[in-house]
Length: 79
Length: 208
Image 1: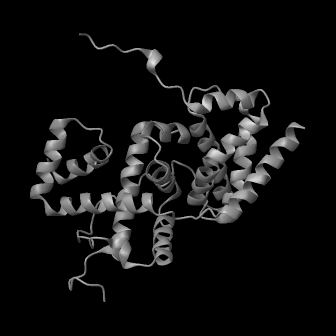
Image 2: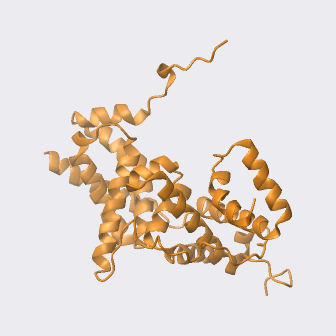
Image 3: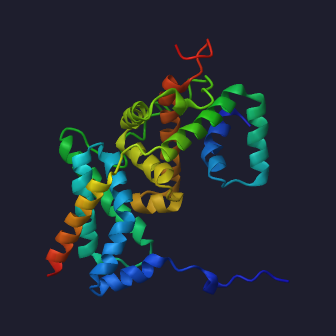
């Protein structure tokens, strides 16, 4: 497996959509290619950081205000 | 023994009943759907537009449109995917209005190879987010994702932040599955490259 092939398989690897033979190939590749190992590790961390940290907060007061506005608009329309 | 595949064992999503009730005019059922998805819709709109006021307007408009068009929802997709699709369209429309000179669409910026070839091969610190305070980290994450073209940002948000499947993302964006995959890979690699500036291990092994 070349570095380019590795990159093209990276998403499938993360998403668990890969058959066992290819998974082995990916793992063999990162064992001998330190650059791809770093790319794999830091891309995984990138996804995790965005998933685990709420980039945009949605505080309760905003939520209540928006919720009330949505329901007012909808019930008014159906009245 | 042969494997038994029965369609009867397929789970029916709880939204199906709520949508059916809402279609018959049950406001409480619709309100429950609003409660379930208002956070997600706000977050998606905020990620795409990068603007809180726009996100507020879009959240209201998206639910109102969904309410008005509920009869047109056929149930071929999940209700949430349908709703996200409405919110994405509203968000992109908002971006287009803001940037009058530049087109904003899901097809934009896909030709460029820029950022899809990794250049930074530095390892990151073991717990990179601990290098920064919560608000500083939030600022870094916002600034970084803002730098992505809207089409990439949108795919990343739906797949990696909102955890939609590739197929659901494709449906919500009106893209093919390969198009979603190609944008997602580039989005992830570009974000990684940019975040690396903040999180990479320094030569000294410690942050100055």
